Image (cartoon, rainbow over all chains, first blue to last red):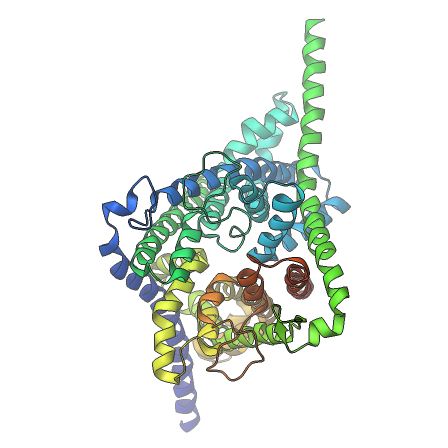
Length: 281
Length: 292
């Protein structure tokens, strides 16, 4: 009897500790989001969205435009390469292929490299060795390498969920391999690939350390791809390290948070659709 | 005749695209080689010029002195201290939260909390860093004294930042444990809590360890958030409530104006960081392979 009550007391202790930890985790997340929204939203003034950056208005708009350019460019470079790599790994490579093993190791390595090392590499290779100086294009190439493993992995996983039956049916109707991949496999794997691409957009938008010494920190809308420009995240870093524009930094944080929350919601919805489709099929 | 022509054209296209796919697949390999090459080739000469031991174990970093001194031991210790702090804070909370999500959480709540973990992973480090700057630094100043920029502040912030990594991987590991472990334990009369902690979690041990290793990698490599709250003094650690500079911070703070040997020493700092990361990744894949 005594032993039993001790056991149940211990069980209760375990349960409370576990619940308490979960409350801390999600409480902290909730607090961060609410704190930044509450402090930042009042400072989202129209002057923050002026076309021209001056030290008076500290406008966000050039940074937002730069962020969009940077995102599109990095995706244009990385998405085809990543998706094609997925095609090769899943549709072409035979199992036990040495190259597949090596690619797997390199993508794992790439995803573990910290962004400051990417930044250092971008500075040494794109900015210095190739002579691109601080520019949008140097930043975009650096980011493209950084998000490559994310796109490869999501493509691979999405392709693997496509049932072989579809491929065989397509071959049976006389379609070639290429046609099968682009017309049959790719459409059904699209939600998974999209979810990966959306997540990489999140990485690009939030990246700072890899861009400071590749894209630079100029606060204007870049005139061409070889001009320097700052994305929103760098804008926020510069504002908060200067220490003069804390309120504007709050406002920038709000914009970043809203973008990230939107991106995550979108990616969740899309991957949910994917799993639902699989159950139906 | 025409049909043969089309056939040949499509054969050619098939072959061409296969080659394109193959070349794309090689890009990630080439990238890793390029990254290693450029970091090491630019870093090693400076390390050699300074002297390996003087560089790694030197306690004095004063690049603008005459003669300058480039010892990064304070930064190595700095990185290790804040990483250890992050692990002490992040691992217990992260693993317990993972247990909660896998075994205690009602389904409806789970559908809400799981995306929340993903969101936590998606919040940019600059936002975490800013939050640390405006909330944690003043808080730590009030509680522990000093100016608030300290090992403790950085550890707390990093501890929060590695939570999603630890939670996601640990949860997956716990879910991968066969149900029979749990059922066997319950059948022997153990409670739900007992069965989870003493039968299921030990079986998920290697997955949980893998999540911790990945968390260590994240903590060591984190840059912007740490720069904003750690104080960044390039000196030997003077106490938990005092400021510190990490390897990553050393690069990002001084790279903007460094030249010649100073610049080389910063790239050398990158080499040391990179070697740390490669080691951690190596251990991670060994543990993961053992899991499979």
